[in-house]
Length: 328
Ligand code: FES
Image 1: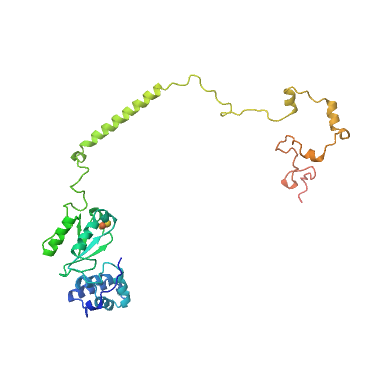
Image 2: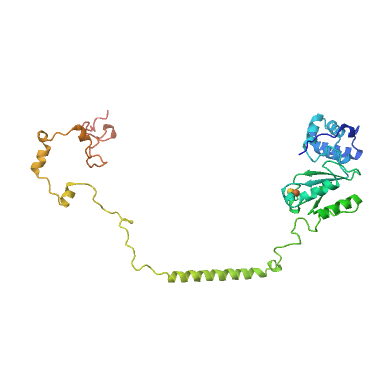
């Protein structure tokens, strides 16, 4: 975006005063806001000043708006230089804003730009006859009809180099011109008229029964296909046996018990050997280092040592028999 600054001093007018008609407008705008909030009317007042000054805002017009709204001049200057809707330099009788954003660029805005550069000159330059000036701007919201330009307050869309050259010729000659689409389409409807939903039967109700019948036929044939597929699919001749653990509790012997060892054919230990085994005087000395490395005996997580009852648990114990008569 170009630097936005006020026009050179040599083209600035010496004064600016709103016309009586525009002063009425100014009073109406200020009256819309509570006392002390009249600064809210700054944009409509600047816009009306621009219209009266011929399409741009001289320094004196900005100062006049500040005076009428009791605002510091710099605050009004900030608004005028921020919004691109305000022109800070003179423009032509026909001020052309060319949209250069992507949709318009893809549809030929570059060609329109070349026409402007050839016929009008650089941006922000007014032709010698004062008829034209132009500026490239961002999307103007008519992308469906790209490429397009805004000339003063009106849009001209669906431009080609040919119809745009003719448009400039007609404006320069003072001939009437057609606003909007230059190829004859209305709003943003498809070029050449409607392209879809053109069958009148869609709207007279005659198609509804036909569609329902077709849905029913399709549903019936689909069901028949499924039935035939099910009939041809035979069950397996040798069903797979169910897994033992499939939903049943299976008993397995996992503990290494004397009864299990006898069952497996191992001879039971004779009582004499059992007694000798428990005699510590006949026990074989085992190195403590190797004893610790011995295979741990099978054990259960359950503890078979009875947990003594707590006297305070409300039950009598061997150490503290309950004394029903002693309530102290
Ligand atoms: S991109 Fe040109 S009008 Fe939106």
